[in-house]
Length: 457
Image (cartoon, rainbow, N blue to C red; front, top):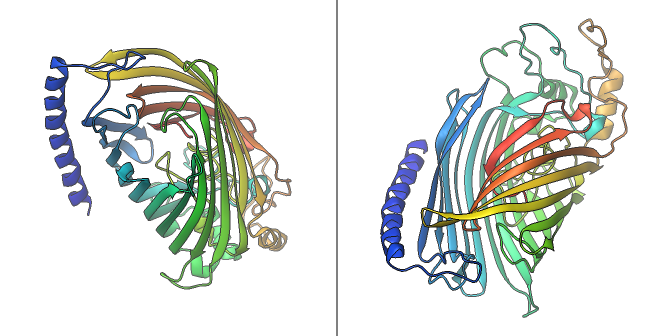
């Protein structure tokens, strides 16, 4: 499958390079501009980029990513008729991602279509326990010289398919009904990277204590039916300067496709995004409020971090914590059956220019993020495991070995702040760098850097 995806990516880039070359030749002969002085893009436009990174445990990251747009006759610019994205990247020690998604708002009349097919494989995936601050921060290997701790990591592979559609709701302006299907197949095991052999992990402790049940310990399959409403008055999808995007999604989940262990539930997700112009289209105050909780039923532990949205802004749709929700808080550091969060940003478009027949902008976005678990997940099981726990090791100075499963702390807001830098091409392709720092050391002490694509909302 990997070889086929790589060949597919290479073919798209080759065709894209030829098509864009022809487009540039045509553009040199005749350029048209809008009232802002931007070149009006028409037809195909390609944005191939290398994927480069490094992780001390995973090795060097390498690969390719390509955004492919079609603007039709240009009458809707900067809105596109449809968009495709292909990414294939991996680390030299074995982790990576293969993804294809399409966003097609105008291919079918009055219908927006969205498809996402992604395979993630991660040999170092974070797991910090359940219910935010209620989970213990204990790490038996913290502070030991020449020892890399794998206590808060697992091995996780996941295949994801999501298909969604949107149509007008009885001709009410900006209001639409939505429907979609999703399928997730998740496989989980202890971390198996070199250097972590023989270490005990929090994941194994949770399994042995029965907090993570035997029938879900190594993952499983989840199918979802999604129905909802979307109100969208934004002036643009990828880089809005004004308007509101509100989404309500009702989700029915079942595991009957794989295992049929009774993890069936109904849940709801509410998202509210508001973009307020402060100074023309140069300075925008943007905020997002989100809530997700289970109405009835039960979830397997490996799905409680999934944010059930109809249309993705970022590749990863998991929280709370990490690059898409609480930037600076440990990824998957705030896991619960239900959670709420908010993001505040000031988006300042510093400068705009034209280069290689494209419209470019550089923007800064200082931000503040906050969130918390509002519906605990297996809280009683955590408390019971803590009551029955007997430490097999002697604690290091300052360690509280008696708090392995349940910290005794009350859940409260997890907060982070930072700033981002964006390079935006044609108001659609957004290259993003965010730096965030948690405001509570229990959520992580290091300044975290996130490099990717698009604003988080």
